[in-house]
Amino acid sequence: KAGVTQTPRYLIKTRGQQVTLSCSPISGHRSVSWYQQTPGQGLQFLFEYFSETQRNKGNFPGRFSGRQFSNSRSEMNVSTLELGDSALYLCASSSGRTGGLTPLHFGNGTRLTVT
Amino acid sequence: DQQVKQNSPSLSVQEGRISILNCDYTNSMFDYFLWYKKYPAEGPTFLISISSIKDKNEDGRFTVFLNKSAKHLSLHIVPSQPGDSAVYFCAASGVGLFVGNEKLTFGTGTRLTIIP
Image 1 (cartoon, each protein chain N blue to C red):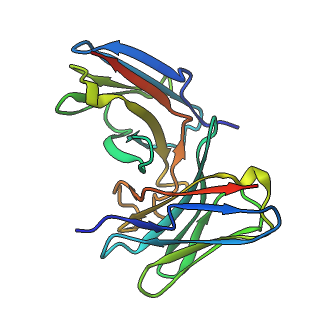
Image 2 (cartoon, rainbow over the protein chains, first blue to last red):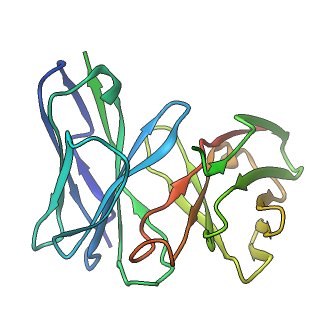
């Protein structure tokens, strides 16, 4: 079974630009979550999508948005980039069964650098 | 507010000895705890989990202990091997907190180095 695929692996953008990151979950998984990893902050939850609907949301500004398509693939968008947005962005998928205790499966991430 | 804390940023252990990684949490609504392992340039990989109804869970060389009254959990690796060198993240979830359990609250990680 193929794992979670994130594209691109690396991205360099300038302040003020916007960026779109892509995530393809494991086949059959309906839940896709996004996390931001920065040094010293661990992994911070951004949002989670299940069946094309945002089900949970973290404490990030509205510049961070996402969506999920009918094939469960997800995209994350960051508008008006700031230097502090430089981070590793991780996507994770799971079956999304409510109340189920299934571990998340992570992709290898997209390393975003904002200059 | 850091609800899941890993107070040791790094830990070095001799090969063959026991590695003990610690994690504390503050939210009593958490009822499911996980450990993830992360190598550089890769995503975190699930290692082991424990439900709050248990106080111990074993999987091969890995054992997780949960002390609910102290809001503390630990990961024991015995014996430690060079391939265990990685960053270990503790994470917590509360089924009653959110729809589903896909929102995990992570600690900041502990870098484990196994010395040959």
